[in-house]
Length: 324
Image (cartoon, rainbow, N blue to C red; front, side, top):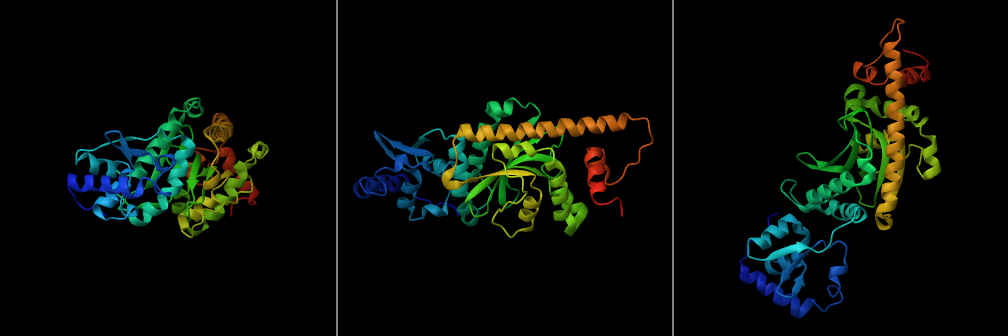
């Protein structure tokens, strides 16, 4: 909901109340050490938590409006200065997404320039600028927390333009955030939208079978802590989430309360991107060789898949005992 309108005097009265009743309290005496606090309201030599000051001034619960741009703009319009309290690391940014996304989805309107948008923008910038991603020039970082409405399962994807330019089809690396906010998965997975459109209720089975085919080339990932069972749980009953689970080729889980540091996160991402790169080079090379063969060629199956990955489709058909 919109933050109730008050004037500058109400904000100043809230500052005084914070100083006299909250600043020395156990809950707020160390508020600047809380990693969830990314912004600080500066007035003279004193520093204040922006959302709490707005809540005191307006009577609105802090859960009813967003931090970041919404709160900062509100205070700026009343003559106050808000600055970053600290630069958040990649690990902290992922933790903040897990911590804040669920309540934002339940309580805030989707549109506008809010804290969730800023967190996903920050994550994309940090990943894009990292040596891990810059060393893979074909990889593009794409994020989403919904389109028109909040997504049940938000994500951060790494698309190699030799394989796909959309999360709807092809294979790619992705962080998927559990619906309950308890953690996220780093995965090598498949686009599910095109599969669902083409195969309908059989899409989970098709995705699971195709994942098994691709997984055969990723066995080495188990040596560096990745799960190759294909079993994950996004804590959701939504069909899209179930399709995400079925699409899993390899995965690693990070609990929200045990998120590793940036060095570990980026090392794991590098291992998965390297496996992704190897898969693309092998499948693209096989497809190119097949297309240059002078023997008669029969194209079997959906043309958008056949042109992309002849070897993979052939192996899948043979595993099913031929075409029925």
